[in-house]
Amino acid sequence: MKIAVVGLGYVGLPLSLQFARSCVDVLGLDVDAKKVELLNNGESYIKHIDASTVSELVESGKLSASTDFSRIREVEAVIICVPTPLNKNREPDLSFVINTGRAIAPHLATGALVVLESTTYPGTTDEDLRAVLEEGSGMKAGVDFHLAFSPEREDPANDQSKVKSIPKVVGGYTPKCLARAMALYSRAVDKLVPVSSCRVAEAAKLLENIFRSVNIALVNELKTVYGTMGIDIWEVIEAAKTKPFGFMPFYPGPGLGGHCIPIDPFYLTWKAREFGQHTRFIELAGEINTRMPEQVVHRVADVLNSRQRPIHGARILILGLAYKPNVDDERESPSYALMDLLTSRGANVEYYDPFVPIIKPTREHSHWSGKKSIEWNRNQIESFDLILIATNHKCVNYQELADWANCVVDTRNAMAGVRIAPGKLWKA
Ligand SMILES: NC(=O)c1ccc[n+]([C@@H]2O[C@H](COP(=O)([O-])OP(=O)(O)OC[C@H]3O[C@@H](n4cnc5c(N)ncnc54)[C@H](O)[C@@H]3O)[C@@H](O)[C@H]2O)c1
Image (cartoon, rainbow, N blue to C red; front, side, top):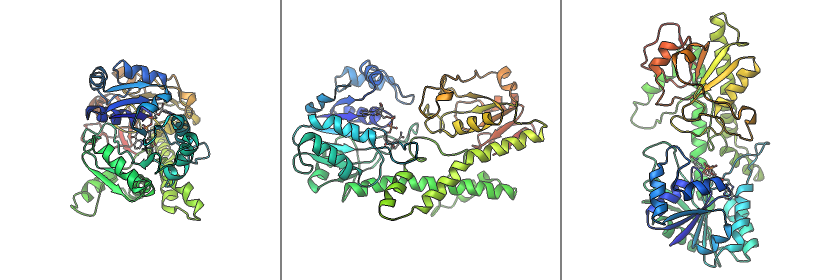
């Protein structure tokens, strides 16, 4: 069997590797010629994916990559893993999905299966994507080709997160489409969860992400409330999580980051309006979570003030640019909001992140592109008035930080258990 995976990013690459490992021939397609070239050379461009796995599968001929979308005619199934961001008005930007649909439609073989994996609102697969595929191919979904949605559940840098062992929800446009999609994924994934439609599968993925967003907002709010009472939220969560049922721990932080949790819930908000519905939980969670960087900066100002320092002119180091620990992904990272807010108040801001040695050009944070991480050494760390821990990477030596820094503000409880002189450490 030969399939194509379109979009070779954080989702598409591990999926391609898993299919290739499962004896399926995989053609990876991407508009990014650099990624295609690296892949064909057997190299990995994602930190937590081993180059040896890529090279082994490329050398065995199971995996190859191309920018030539006409090669869709070679495959029995196409899996789409392209971005689904928000536009500048914070509305769904389906252009990547639609452009992919347009690019593959003219080359789709009769009887082929198309599966969308990108997170999106209910109706994307059977309305938006179906329309472009039918128009471009002259074929009918459910009759001449098959269509399905199966959300991806990647958790980068989580060693337990394996494409093979994580149950996969699958919804088809018709029962036949579902059967085809189940047959495809059963080659590479241990447990499949069939549902009655593409829309149910799309909605299930959004529920998973909204659940996280709302619960993170809840602990962020409780952090503030308990903080004013002199109660440490981290200790509270440790205590509460000993309950063996009916509780799941979520942790506060400096704000939401990554490609999913800050974005996906608003796909539903937008679609719900079409049905005259309001998504109040989502809006409230969004409001609380997006206020967090501002709140952290107020805390930084208070800490500096207690040391007779204004923010203006202070040297502040942001520790961690990636949006979560142990990954090199800094998309939507709250560290950018912190750097912007502190700089706008006159601080001199640097960052340290061993996984992001230099900030690549991005549309959203173009003013930071080219900035480099500082080196980790005593002289550097001592030279800052304040170190703000935004991401708790495991590889950072927090004891050295405690010994070298003048003052640490910790948004992640990264300093728990570290010996530090009294008056130097603050939580935010
Ligand atoms: N990263 C995660 O952990 C994660 C988790 C759950 C869901 N998702 C969802 O999966 C989808 C993909 O996310 P990602 O993190 O892999 O994104 P990514 O940016 O890492 O990768 C997307 C890839 O698609 C390529 N691309 C863009 N437009 C294209 C086009 N028209 N044709 C072909 N390729 C194109 C890009 O060059 C890039 O290589 C999104 O909908 C996201 O919400 C991601």
